[in-house]
Image (tube, rainbow, N blue to C red; front, side, top):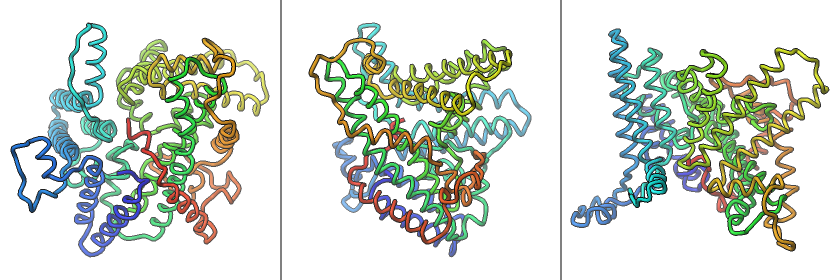
Length: 526
């Protein structure tokens, strides 16, 4: 189920929130949590649910369901996530018991086995066909595993559970309540596309009695943040997606691209992904706040970054945290000299890129960012040793650094979006005037009126405050980036006033009217 659909907005959300509030008040926290877990499983299973009778007819032709239950919806991938959660809960209990008993060696091997099992599950669904395809290309064979459907959100709930198991091994947490663990994993605002949450961030909130007392402030702030996110997604991201698609889809059918088309398509996708992911993050945070739960901040003006290191502190912040804590540091981090540090950076980003999808383009994108991170650290180390005076005024140096970083990011997104490395080379070559040029008289793929739109979006992401800054007086985050409420003019900040309420209602109304043209969230594919 998508946040940006009528069935979610007008059926699922009101029923789920209403049931949660009523059960919290009249039955207790345990029943309210159970209803939220059940609703989250319905949310997850919506995309592949089919009537039991149809499922048996399609997969087991000789088996027939009684008519009175043939309509009952079943979801294979809901069964998968339930099995995954039960397995990881059991493994977490075993590892926790070993740690408590002081049997660190045994706990280590249980952890290795548990993480391996999770990665094998993820690897089968996400990478099996990719590896078979590449083996066929190398060996000239024709092996096939058939069609493997990628379960929604498997990358996110797998990483969340791996983080939990590692934290149990470290003695940080150990969950003994199955109901709380199921809600921790399935809580629908983060289930499909993050953020990747930590047990210690969420469980105290699920156990806090205040969570189960209805608060109009939570509803108002949550609905306002959700409205901003839905507007970003439905009105901005999906509108600019047409221009990105014309280059990255139709561009493959032409021999060569105009330079302005290549840059236009690259910038269009750069902004599409920004507003799509930013919008989803806002919607997830807003929805969670309606239930009295605060999710960690996951996105904070990454295109304002002055270097690539800062970009990764602002873009998909919980993934960056996961890669740092559970991959880069275990690989050795910066503890074994500068050369190993740079190798670990590149390797971490290579794996992080490959996590996004089973394609060489993702791997190259990750390696590209790893090299950029290593180069950034090298540059800072080189400059600090010489302590030379600044060559440019601070405002010009900052602007130049931001522009240079933004161009690197755009180059990276071309690798990320292209269907293969050959087409990525074609787009990048056109952007920088390398390679074949279109024949004289070849029409442009993009319309001229897209450029004012792109310029406006660039001004939007560079000059305006982000959602965390706008709502900083009413929304705090676990491990959040601190924002100063007085750092911007007052009109940049949301307050509980009639004018602000009308503004958010207008954003929500415009977004709802645009829902018929709304597409799937891009990060649902990762």
